[in-house]
Length: 222
Image (cartoon, rainbow, N blue to C red; front, side):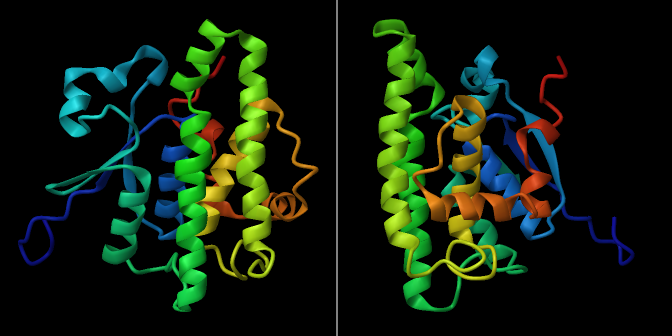
């Protein structure tokens, strides 16, 4: 209860998995906006995303999902745009219309043309039906295609970060994808100097570092 007798607002509740790049995006956005939240781990390795309980939260069975009082949202882009409107502190979208459009484009390239093609179910299917080596070749091809496009797209907009000198929506989507591919697949970023420079900058952003997979409560100790 608050001092005037009103019920205190409920803390945001994030359904997340430490290794999920989509969850990683939302954690970064929450951190940038200084929002306190409760972490609810959904173990994808144990297929907890397909449990009846979680399917009531997100019928498609993906993380992340966010509860804000009575509002339940799924899909990282929908969640982040909701947070951007409701919690305007540290805006993630620039006022400049052209830069705003570039941020939307970057977010969509990552979330539609890279991440879905290298997500765990896809790679497991390729590994089981084609072979383990085919997984690596697939990742190299799909991520390389996306990163090549992003290099070209951002060359006239990048500053310290993707579209200027402030962290934006584009960085929220880029950082998890670059970090995840580098960590999981030792992806060679040498062909992408702009993205590599951004990745170095991300190492000094507390909101990103605090959202790293190894900092999450469900990260395996052993």
